[in-house]
Length: 160
Image (cartoon, rainbow, N blue to C red):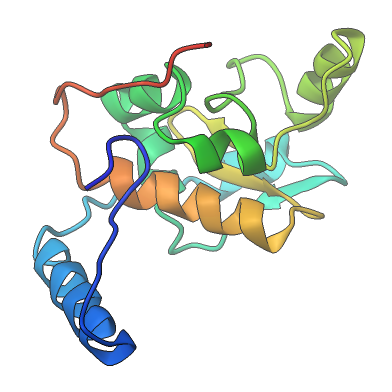
């Protein structure tokens, strides 16, 4: 394991490396993801022309509905690819704003809208024009945070 990057596997052949990777993935999948239902009504109210509710099976819904997991997601970035495809950390809407209001707030700061937004106690919104890399990394963050025990120490990337 390469800290804050992921898994590197090698083998005597490509087939052996794939076999090892499949074995590691199978072992990791024995830790079930924790699931929380989404609040589609609230998500629809805060969605916009640019953001729509994530698919109902998206793990970021669980992250947004768990105060501890939401705090972990918004505290910083866990791996470089997230920074590249999704920006630094994750952004959660405040209880009084919707996706349009957040977009206006970010534009004032000369920032672009992230590929996903977490809506506390409701679920997640995905930007409709998010690229495949951003979509994959958004799901990755959800997959990771729904499998890590709440309160586990996390090693965030530093600004440097």
